[in-house]
Length: 249
Image 1 (cartoon, rainbow, N blue to C red):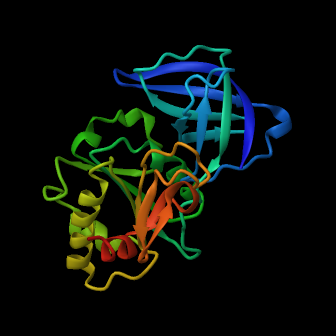
Image 2 (tube, rainbow, N blue to C red):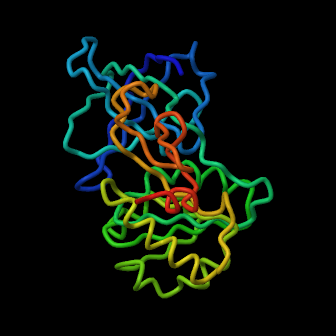
Image 3 (cartoon, rainbow, N blue to C red):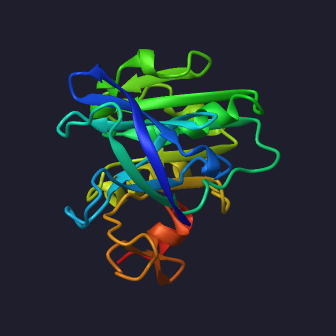
């Protein structure tokens, strides 16, 4: 992990509630790699006020420019300074022999899945993104045109669910905290109903708790995984749901 100096090059309002920022990294640090699932902790002031950094998850990368997607509640300006601490977390695990990937956004923006979707389009036969509940409001023109899109009001109302769950070689889902575990439990039940045996490293959920420090020191982002508490900022944000669900409660 390192601190990177960057400048906001462009600010675009892409929907009533979302904006995208194109952030240019210092060329001397452009070799820094960011993989799908990893994020930055950002500060847009030279001072320590505010003390806590904001989580910024890239949705695209083009050379030295990283695009992040944020709510419109905060105001950013072109040429504004940004300090990026990262990369935070581990890349989303992907099977070497993956052919078909199923991505599911449950009541959440799919932004944290987009970098994975784009990277996988180059190496797998098919990528499907399912938008459920509030995720159906996400602007479709922001999604890669090569991926298949499905949507439904809820997991229960998703008409192509059984076929999609059987088709997928791997599944990665995102749901909003603090209800993420509740959504993932329902998804796990559906996957078990359809597939009976759910192997390890097949069904992943992204967890996005507050990450004040980014180094596992504050214990604010601990999650129960494999019978022990682990820091999401170090071992996440993607966790094998067969391990997470098993050790809850």
